[in-house]
Length: 163
Image: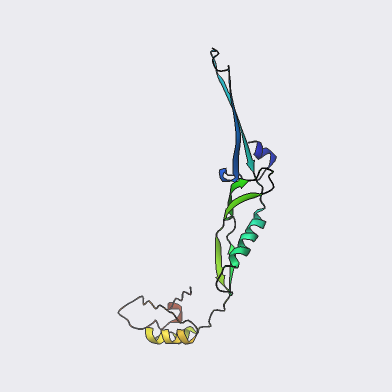
């Protein structure tokens, strides 16, 4: 609770705290008789304040360097960066954290320009040939009505999903 007053607006979780020495005392002392008992425990915790934007940028920079395709870029999902405090050295100048982040990886490669009129009324093989020539080499074509062997004759009845 003392952290909450000293650091308003900072969300602390159990993973961000290192437990230190605990001091436990009772009144009356051990061996004394009494009709009441008071027990007190004082626990010391240490936490590290980390700038989430700086940590997110550091994680993003390191993950981007590991992407195999230079035409991809990464965007961290907001509020997805979390960390756990692993250790803190004695003079409290260095800490080890375990960080996690979720991200979207996007391709900057230009999507092929497709003329939907070229797909209308075609057989799946003819549609695949057009898509391959247009820059989509691996196309899966699903017909909504399997007994009709042609793609719809209306452009707005054809749905393209590019992954």
